[in-house]
Length: 161
Image 1 (cartoon, rainbow, N blue to C red):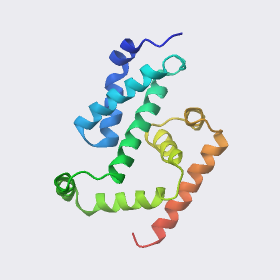
Image 2 (cartoon, rainbow, N blue to C red):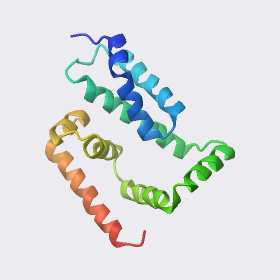
Image 3 (tube, rainbow, N blue to C red):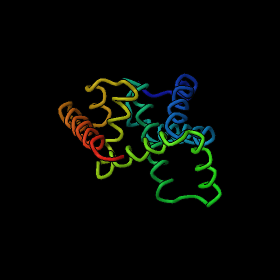
C-alpha cells in the first residue's frame, strides 16, 4: 500500500515532534527536525512499505535528531549560543554535566548505529526484534551491542566520573 504523506503528517506529526523535542531539547529545532523527517519520507515514499509507520517514523526522527546533535558538536555555533547553552545547563547542576560526560565516554568509539539501537530499545521500548528490524541487524547483533554498552557502562561506573 502506498504511503499517504498528508495522513501520516496529521496522524503521526505530534508523535514525531515529541521525539524530536525529547532528543534535541529545543522547541524550534524539534519542529525543524520534524519537517526534515517528513521531507525524507516524501523523498523515499516509493521505496517504503506501510507495515509499521510508528516504528518507521520514530527511526527516521531518531536518525535526523542524532545527525543534528552530531553536527552541533562538529560545528559549534557562535559564542553567544554556546554561552546560552552553558547558562541553561547551569540550572540543572552538576548531574546533567556528569551524565553528558558519561554518555560521551560511553558512546566514544562506538558505531553510530549503536546509539540508535540504545535509543530505540531503551528509550522507546521497542523489543529486541523490533529494534533489529529497524536498524537492519540480527537480534543477536543488537543483543551483543547492548551487552557491550552495559559492560562499558559498568566499567565507567568503576572509574572516577
